[in-house]
Image 1 (tube, rainbow, N blue to C red):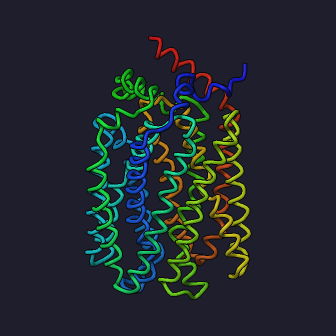
Image 2: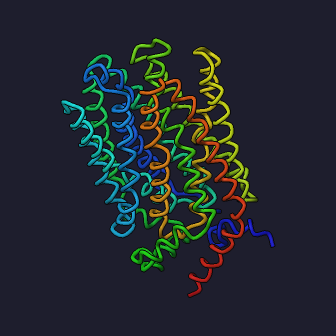
Length: 442
């Protein structure tokens, strides 16, 4: 028996012939739009690092903490808040979260010292905590399973595109109007998108276009959501899904570090003005976003007949990232270094689609928001939070170049985790499929 052909389930395959309705794509666009606002509010800080450093005399460690505290709180709170969203409604949770991070971003604009800014940034993290997991779970519930890696990669790429807009627009606004206006503009954009989302997306309209397997799974195991022991067993049911969580988190360490520190690196070592450095750094981040979408599409195509091949794409992306950046930051500043950074950034977050698809395949649909919360927890606590903070800490002691030279080893560790996950994936997926069929019969 060819075990890898059980991905996705037979019922899900029957649904793949149907095209997603236009409303589903509208929801996708609005949900990604809010993710753009999420990351614009998060990453605008990095564009004004040089301005804040000059205005308040901050160390690199302090600057790194202002960036890392958001990802830290996202990592710590994403799981409990996503479980609540599974129980009390994803749309309602998304609206509340977007309102909080927009108001908190406005609070950043009004901060007068490091402590106030740190508190405001923490509130941004609180508002953003569960958005990624809840948003992607909502999207996957209304699209065919065959598009999981593509949609997950495209959704997560919204974070990179939001970082691009936040860094580029924040840098330009900060250079002309001051860093406070950079935060103010992001807050205003978030509020506008929130109003649009609230007026269009409702639980009733979502229920009408959900794919059939998700509807059955969501109606049947309600006790799965309420029983912590059963929930944990569903989230960590196999070695392969644990490897997907951890590998995904580690592979995002480098993007987390570079998103935060590329504007400062270009400012210090290429003698660029803060606004020009922010715009060029945003271009690198744009490459990461394009790469996430492209890598997700490639992953779905490569794994169309054999799901285990998706793990191979994740491994390849991690190895390419590690090699390109390890060489780049040992070269002197110049065109060759920038070209290698481009190559590394293009695939630096490319495993996001593969890891998201693996998590969706290996966990029950009824707890997908909680499963993606766990993935977000790993992404932030292992990657996005420690990336900026540890890089800043090392930079205070060895210089920013010295800090950036050691980070490419982390995606190599992620490649090892993905290889371990692939080894047990077929057996784990077959067991999940048997349990799914048994629950549908009972």
